[in-house]
Structures are given as C-alpha cells and as structure tokens.
Length: 227
Image 1 (cartoon, rainbow, N blue to C red):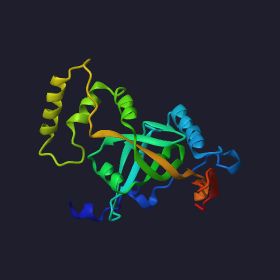
Image 2: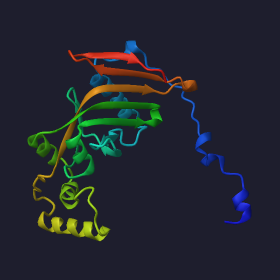
Image 3: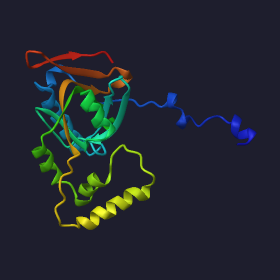
C-alpha cells in the first residue's frame, strides 16, 4: 500500500457506521395478530414467499450452546412448520446436534431483511421420529441423499478430494433411480416454541416488536417490546 493509499479517505459505502436504511412500511398492531404464533408465522411466511423478495425464506439461523454456555450459530433450512413448531434436518453427529442433545434450549432467527421483518424464536429441541425422518428423506434429491451419507458433518477432513471421493463411491453404489437407505446418524429436530417475536421495521428506528410467550397453563400471552 502506498502512502497515498494509507491516507486516502475511506470509501463511505464500506463504513458500517454510515450504513442506514429508512423503513417505510405498514406497522404491526396487536389487533391484527393471529391468536397463536404459528398461525401468525404462517401469514408472514406466505407473504415472504408470494412477494418473492427474500432468497430462501425458509432459511433460519439456528443458535445453540454447549453445556458450558458457549454459543454457536449457523444457517439451516426449515423443512416443515405446524402447531407443534419448526422442523429441520441434520447429521446427528454435527456440532449443533450434539449441543442440542446435551442442551435442548435453542433460538431461531428468520432474517427477512428485504421486507424489514424478523421472526425470533426461543424453544426446546427434540428429535423427530424415524418414520417422519424417513418420509422427508425420500423427498430429497438423489444427490442430497448421497450427501447425507458422504459427509460426516462438522468433523475435520484432510481435503475436498476426500469428500468428493466418498461421494463418488456412494454414487457408484446407489446410482440414480436406486433407493438410498436413510442414514441412521441423520434426522430431524423439532423446535417447540416458548417465545416467538415478530419484528417489523419502522421509520426512525421505532420498530414494532410483538412477542408471544407460552403460558404454563396453555395458550399465549402477547406483549409489546420497546425497540
């Protein structure tokens, strides 16, 4: 870098402190909410899909913590949701699965930034049954089925070539059109929500934040949070 480069003014487009967006969208009012969070999530998810503004609206950040409280996060794809919660699939030997088995408390984040929306979930993770796992596995593309066998997720490997060699061996054993068995080390987690917050961006950073909290006796309590 030359002396001139070192003293040049930084590009303001690259300055995080100067990055600002103004939100001019319809707000979120308590009277407009569904009775339960999963119904409300369904409304927003449908809008995210129909408006086609969000790349992979089923992508969510899953945050876990180990038994010492050290957190980790990653983006995964939600594959199902219903009144019982949110479902995703993974290798049960992966870091997230090991942490969820040891500490089932988890948070999810759906970052629908183009719509100035977020959905934030806290809940308890439980493994799905093998029948449910197998039913979903059969819907995956053939290559993804092989990938579930080829990758020992989160483990250290020597090279990319090692991974591709494992995949090639499986592709030869199970060619296109032949049924791939469901890996015993692979399956789903269902997140049973305890809180679900719907975040709607508003002008002047006066965002709307409405949170459902599960009542011990059943049902949901809704409260507004300050932005």
